[in-house]
Image (cartoon, rainbow, N blue to C red; front, top):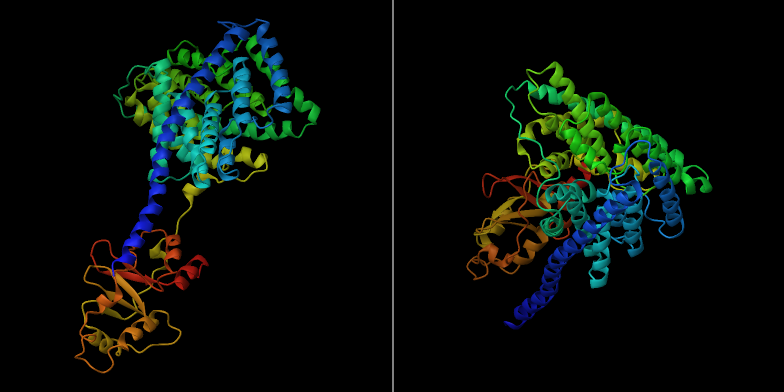
Length: 586
């Protein structure tokens, strides 16, 4: 009697054990990936700094010839290596990681990872107006892809590992785990489960621990805490949000025009585009603005401490946009994060300087606070990551007193950017490359159908599971079966454990036939629910996603939908036909 249950239980345990082992291995590998990614990102940043000192000098200044020669010469090297050795390293790294996730089952080749490290370090170190964060994201994803392939995980796990590594790489580059986690969820995978989130958190934290071992735990930028003495000062930050939204539109429009134009040029010209871009960016530095070359974090710090005049801030913001557009459109590997933060800081400091001069009674915050908010503003508007932008500002500054201005200004800038530039910049790049990756912004805006949208009144007969089979049979006789009416061919049985059972008339007839016409037989006096077993229809509620209903119809012909406030009370029922009619708009 007990043999079959024991065998079934043994099979279940045997099947569950490998899954549990793989889950533990997955979490352990997430930590290992975080450590390796952190070490690589630290090495990547050190390589950029070393190359920058070697090629541009420790203190680049206008009218130094090396500002022209270094980026142009390295541009030739980058073009040759991209063409003949590392053809997959173009771009920032964000779209390439998304493509690996959605097209290549999480596969990023070792060659691509090595090429991204070398060529992005050469490009940024030589002065190209690009940043290290996006390449760090792809390097981390490459580490995850390589390790997961070596371990031999399932295809599903292979796909998940790319964003786990991406979060580790970005967290180490920013020294900001929360921002990295949010960005990967917000812009790379779009959705998450508890298991995926746990792995992403572990990898990000592990990589930041490694990075802080080398760099320390202090935030990237430091400004004094601000105090909003007058609520009207929020209007001053709102103006910054408007300026940032307009600037992000200009930035995106320039990239949207120049990048495809450069890619349409003959093959031979594409070989010299990185060198020409390097020469042009170097020319900007040579003739007076060396701050726009490279990532520009030193200049951001100077802007936060009020070391630039108003006109200089505007010039730096304008020419940073121009230099980044030229560098990125040429196909030179490098990221958009640092240029975005640079431009936002300069615009924020410029707006802050004007408002403090003309509205000194209201604008009581420091120039640094406006520069910091400006960084978040452009990040939210240009990269279209509103949630990440808030936490990024808080983490890179360690200053939580700025949260209200950041939320207000970022929201305004994001809304303006969406209205002027409907297609986010990373999605625009994917379309230019002939790819159609999921648009996370569109997914966030989609209105999902829910059970309540297709719910129908309860028309099926309802029986109590505690009733005897005889009384249930007599009760059901008062409900004549109507051919063609789905609800009439199904009976809902409310069990004493609070669950429901949807039984077909044929299923109940098979039970009733055993009783015959004897209402005193043991079978007739048996409670109906004892014959139904332990199986119950799923507990469903009106606010759940309607798409979740489909896999239940394989077992159940009718789904009762319960009220969340009153146990056992039904809001209505659903059949497969009801769901299909709703999706068809009928």
